[in-house]
Length: 143
Image 1 (cartoon, rainbow, N blue to C red):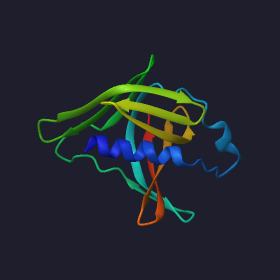
Image 2 (image 1 turned 90 degrees about the vertical axis):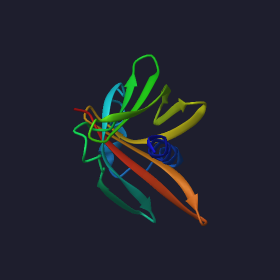
Image 3 (image 1 turned 60 degrees about the vertical axis):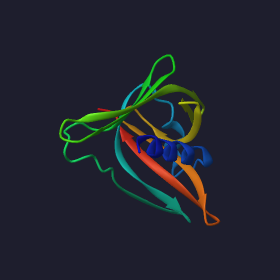
Image 4 (image 1 turned 135 degrees about the vertical axis):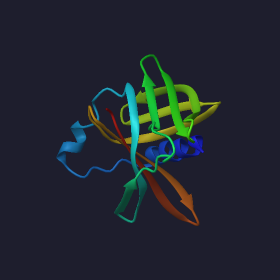
């Protein structure tokens, strides 16, 4: 499940970069390294974006997050259940311009950075379903 969420988020980000204002062009230069906690997710289609709060497992007091470690190590942590069991995906990452590429279990995923500041990471990826392209958007916060 964790892989599916990450893959959708990262694939959607590769498809397109949309600027909403002058400040967006300068908001992608902050460091990517660190722990990024899932905050919101949703879709963008036909010029409309709908985001909802990310649903954490209510039985566990830990928050799901991505971790980008200097040197190219990537971790995705998904916690669940009363004992806070963890589903971890580990791999590698690279960033080139506004594109993030991860490789987990031999599967390469790319995403486009919509916004990257010291406290917010917003990525977008695209998928086509029934002839309609939908952009999957995920927002993360650094704490």
